Amino acid sequence: MPVKNKRTFEDYHPGFYPGDKAFEKKVARHNLGDISASGNYHVFAAPSEVRITAIKLVVDTTITISTTNYWTVQLANMTRVDDLLATADNMNYDSTLTNDTVYEITPDQNINLAPDDVLELQLTKVASADNLSGLLVEIEYVVTGVVTTTSTTTTTTTTTT
Image 1 (cartoon, helix red, strand yellow):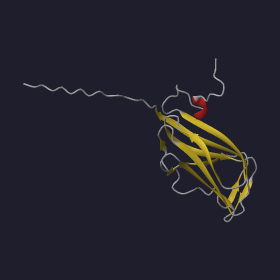
Image 2 (cartoon, helix red, strand yellow; image 1 turned 60 degrees about the vertical axis):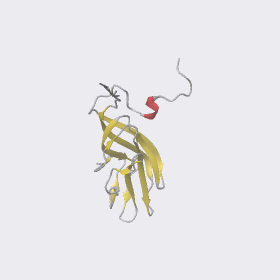
Image 3 (cartoon, helix red, strand yellow; image 1 turned 30 degrees about the vertical axis):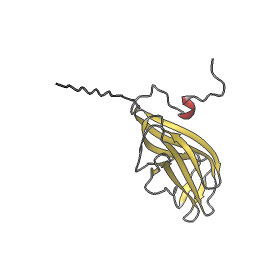
Image 4 (cartoon, one colour; image 1 turned 90 degrees about the vertical axis):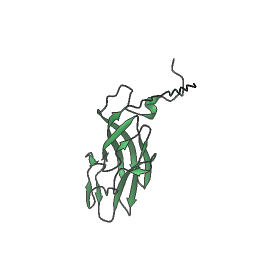
């Protein structure tokens, strides 16, 4: 019988189960809703050794982005204090972010994560940028290994003659 109010492995690592195969592509999805101001959002906890391959963002209302009113995006590993983008992405700078269309960002550094590394999506609103309506975030990754522990025993033998 399940224990009431007990968190499970799945609660901490959505979309992962112990039978995952190495190098199998996976996706962690988070609907962040309407974003109207700068903020930081925890979006991923590495279930094992993984490599992040893409960050995908989708909004449900088209927004106009200009050289003065835009959003920047950074994905940071909060466990190791590393950014996954060398430079924060300016989300279609001087263009539009079209509704129901994937905006994909490819991380260019620190993409290999250790088990339990936590990723945070950092959104910064510049000037009077339109709100990000119905923001859906997908973190695409591949499992590169499963954590195993090993133990070694050292035996020292001393012979006296």
